[in-house]
Amino acid sequence: MAGRVRTFGKVPVWLVTLTALCAMVLAGCATVAAPQGAPPASHPAKKLTPIHVDLNWVSNVEFSGIWWSMKKGWFKSAGIKLNGLCSSKAGPNAACVRPYDFSNTPESENDLCVRAGKALCIGVDDSSAVPLARQAGENNVAIWSGSQKTPFGFMTCFVPKKPKVNKKCKSNTHKNITSPKQWRGLKIGYQQDELYVPEIMLGSVGLNLSDVKPVKVTFDTSDLTTGATDAHLVFINNEPITLKLQGVKTNVIPAYKYGMKAFYADAMFVRQSQISKYKGVLKKFVSAVDRGWKYAMHHPKSTANLVVHKYFPTSEGGGPGALKQQQIEINQFAKTLSRDSKGRINGRMTLGRWKTIIHDLKTYPGSIGGGPLLTANIKAKSCFTDQFAPPGAK
Image (cartoon, rainbow, N blue to C red; front, side, top):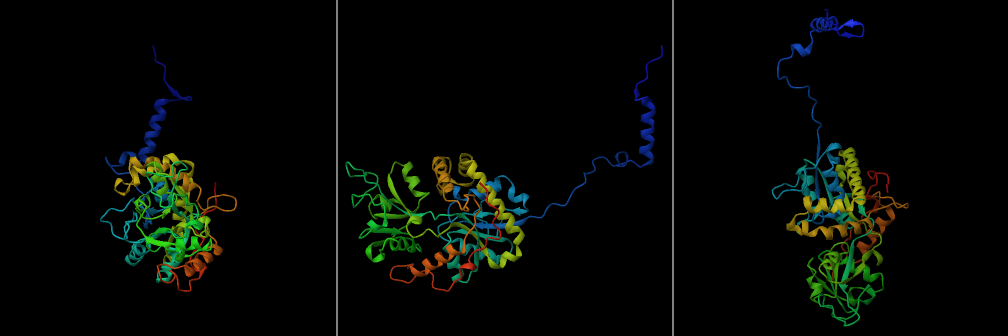
């Protein structure tokens, strides 16, 4: 009995197959002619622009925008080469992020990077560093501000009502010092080159350095807890949190409430000469960092986990043991991020605030018995640009 023939529509399958084979032969089908193991067609790799970043602090959640942009691949998608944290052998021009090492400032590292001339060099520091660098001949320009409020402030020992003794933080006054108004005659600890901070705060309440006993200190808060100082200059979103987790109660006096409302923090800066050369890349870099910060604000726990496990080494005080501290710190940063009048994160700055920053640096001393840190006639409009700041977003 004759078998049933399979058809493609109403045409026998064998006829369709034969027709297709003939067409392939006549057309010189590449599938038949190609040698075995031939590589697939390739496209030229996208050339990435190397960027070197110098930070003003250890690699913690303070720089979450950078960490998320590296983790998510947003830098690479934008054509930017940024490999991660710098190794100990990395040169000043390597495409990596160099944490602060407590010896070289971001401005000096940035200067070395610019002179090496192989990468786009970006620094991060307090807003005061920009006019001071311009005074030194390094024409730095702030291009985006991480924090609307300066994290500078002072920490004093908390004194309970009964008994008036804090066993973990020795108070010489046996009083809760919560304002610069109470500093008269007290030992005020400040770090090198930051004497202007207590001076501005004192000036805001009608006092000056002659009314207190300035004491140069390091970042070690034991000067406060042992009673060597009565007030200690800190970042209010860092050291007070660390001591609190150690069971040490303190009072915090924010600098932005006492004369330093104009100061920005974590301002990213570049050399003026690099702005025109890398204008397109800078816009993409700022946009990626801005995007990273917005992501961090919506994912604070994930941000703390990312930082302590990938970017914040134990040698710098990080590692899993710092997870809780970093979770609290990222929430503190959420309160200080640069925002517009509608509360949207945007990293922008204003001419009026830069004028105030310059005025304060030219008014208050930078060293005991010396003149102010800033003496040159620096124009406020030369210190910053908002041309790279992306539109604000919640």
